[in-house]
Length: 216
Length: 220
Image (tube, rainbow over all chains, first blue to last red; front, side):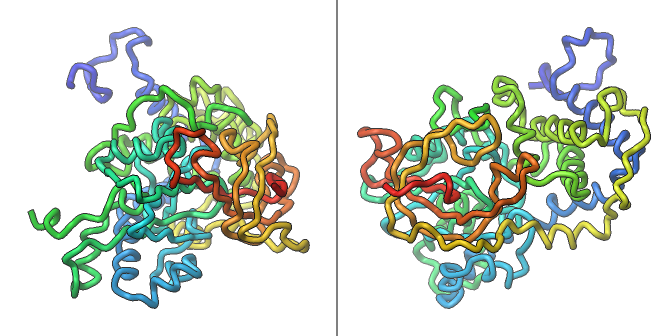
């Protein structure tokens, strides 16, 4: 809605109370950057590089390639089970917030879902930076206490017979869910399979897309 | 600490409301807040556990109503004030008032970023004791209420579970966050039945896992 948008540009005749929290934060961050550059602690070009990295190069397409390979290559899946960190590193996905990886395999009997109730731990090299909802109180509070209701909010209904296993990332272990391979994808290439793998399916708040969902 | 960050099981926080086609960043300031937090972290003046503790020290009411990058930027300011890198007036005005601390290094350059990110910061460490528990052992999470940093959430304290995986030694956050050393301990993934945590109304088949350090656990 335009009237309460945070990025309106009309003149600043208003009192301070009309400034939104967010524009105050924007000013605070701007002041902080100026200060830290002036003090010689940070180089703005390095900040640009960090932003560029996570905006364009590191994101859930990485994880989708891991999942697609796991679906197509039993040997790779076996390596994911025994040493996910190195299996994933062999594909070039390595480093910060992915130093200790564990893959969680969804099956006919089990659905896995990942949360960080205490902060926002998330496997950056394979999924990039977490979405807002993952870091926010509603998901963090209920993912552990009522995961089936959380899944329903994401449109995922599971039969009672399927166990829901929630993984709270309380240490530096980072979890990647390997969703079940959709029916009707026999003979598909890894590239094509990767188009079915959504970010949420690798957090466990979604399922992989079916072939119908990508072609329709 | 029993702060605003310890959210497992809290009620009344509303719908999750996931955004469709969410962008990586929602505003220019979020990009800069993110990058400033990482770039300042690269200077090695604090560790990840201290950084988490700085964020969770925010007043719980403010913590729960701030966006995550607001929490990050306030946490960063606290870390820099505590480390003597800036003084409060400077943060307010965005202008230097006192001589910078000599960190004996240059700021991280753009061409160093990829190498630093690739290297990451592994938390695994050698521990010279034998692990106290094996997979399959029954354990109980201790009851404790430290005012300092801990990674044992309230919803698990006093509950009984089973060791699933032994991850060898990892840096112990409860001391590392407070300048008291890494003191690595054996780390385990522990499984808790949903009914053990949430009562008889929880689904019989469901379970929660957490990664817990050895001193959080006793035999059950």
